[in-house]
Every structure is written in structure tokens, then in C-alpha cells.
Amino acid sequence: MSTISTDSGHGGPAQDERPYHEQYHAAHHFRNRDHEFDAVKMGVWLFLATEILLFSGMFCAYAVFRMLHPEAFINGSHYLDVEYGLINTLVLLLSSYTVAAGVRCAQVGDLRGLKRNILITLVCGVAFLAIKGIFEYGPKAMQGKLPGVFFSYPNAHDPNEPLWWGVYWVATGIHASHVIVGIGLFIWLYLRANKKHFGPRHYTAVEGVGLYWHIVDIVWIFLFPMLYLIH
Image 1 (tube, helix red, strand yellow):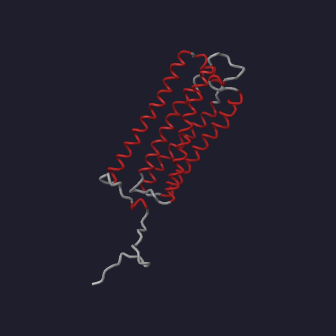
Image 2 (cartoon, rainbow, N blue to C red):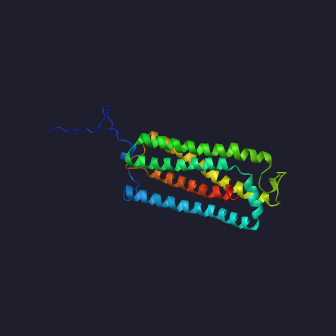
Image 3 (cartoon, one colour):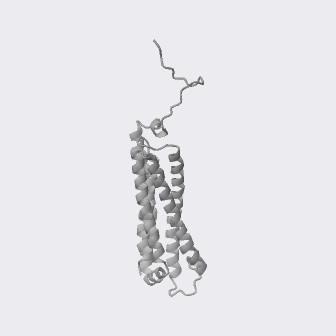
């Protein structure tokens, strides 16, 4: 009776040539992959709940200050470029679609589609920051439209406009920082996708990053009308 050797030609154990996602085993403290996936997804949702609390605090501050100083907020909103805000909104809406498409590609094993959608989402995030920094933050900073004691714009119509700029810079700045984190996560996903880490049997990271990015997009959907369209 003959047996099939499990050793390689070099005398060592045979290497498993299956893609990483097929070899993946859940961590020892989980019963199986499904248990791990559900636990990780629950953890992501709990983290996103804290993010919602963070932005909810800013929305409440916006509502209170706008109620107290409506003219300052209306005047300040006139200085914003609605066109750039709208372009950025469309960019993030496109990225919401591509990140969802990327999750679907991972689920069905379409590695090429997954990498393509990750790249498009990554480019959208970079484009959002470029538009915000070059066409909005840069000119406003040079004109003195800064928050609080840094405000030096000479043509202000209301003494409380520095308060408006405080809300604008804090809200959009914190949102931009989340976009930067998202860009870093997509770079990480792309590098892992190149190594075939994701597929139908393992796509937890893709799902988690996708959920995070949707929250980033949803927050901007609220910020855009609140800041750009109130006049």
C-alpha cells in the first residue's frame, strides 16, 4: 500500500497554496468564523455609536448658537461656496456606492472588482480633502475668516461671526480628520486585497471599514445643508 507524502520536495511540510481567505481560521476565543464576524461587526457598530454621539454634540452646539445668533450664521453662510460643497457631496455619494460595491465584490470573490472599488473610494476621499483644502480652507484662512480670537476678516457684518466660523472650522475639521483616517484604512485594505486576504470566506475588515465610511458620508450629508444652505 502506498501513501501520499505531505512533505514538499525540499523535505519540509507542503505549503498550502490556497488564498489567505480560504485558509483563514477564526481566533481561538471564537466558536467559528460566523461568530467572529458577528462579534467584530457588533464592535464596529458600538464604535460608530460613539462617533454619532461626538457629531451629535456638534449639531446641538450648532442649533443653540444659531438660535442665539441667527444673523451671524446667515451672514457667515453667505461666505461659503455652495458649488464646492455640492461637488464634495457628490464625491462622497459616489464613494458610498463604491465602498458598498467593494463589500459585495469581496462577498462573491471578485478580487479585481474589490481592488477597483477600493481605489475609486480612496481617490474620492483624496479629492474631497483636496477640494476642501485648496478651494475652501486656504482662501478663507488667507482672508482672516478664522474662528474666535483668530478672526480678522475686515468686512464682517455681525460681531458674532467669529462664533459662526468656530462652528464651521470645528465641524468640518473633525469631519476631515475622519476622512483622513478613512483614506488610511482604504490603503490598508488595498494592500491586503493585493495579497488575496479577502474573499467569500473572510471579508470582515472590508465590511467594518465600509460601515465606518458610510457614517463619514452621512455626517457630511447633514453638514452640507446646515452650513452651506441656511441662507
